[in-house]
Length: 148
Image 1 (cartoon, rainbow, N blue to C red):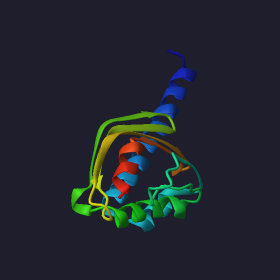
Image 2 (cartoon, rainbow, N blue to C red):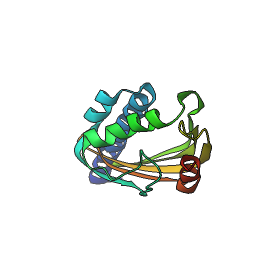
Image 3 (spheres, helix red, strand yellow):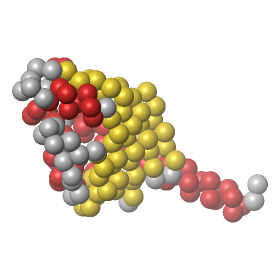
Image 4 (cartoon, one colour):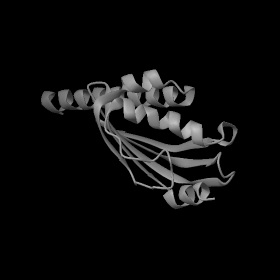
């Protein structure tokens, strides 16, 4: 192995380690409901993707760190905390990108209906902050749970 490829691998490994660390901080802040920390973890401008769903009050377009962090507060306001479940089955990191895959479930407070399904979350970390948050989930199940 040449010195150049060794340096490149070390550099790539350190970027991946930094990405993993920020994503772990994100998950810890999310679990703790620490909105202030989430605002710090998200970049000032975020590439946010979550399929718009007009019947789901916490799903809407967002672009700033504060708006992204607020989504978690809004989700908590509209769902029953004791019924909220999320599990991560896979946590993959490649440089600045991370993908988490798992399952999520909960109950909508206003209707008492439950939702459940798989999810995939793609995050990108740049300069220690999340710049991309693309969430793919079972939006049909969530919409049905929000509909009286």
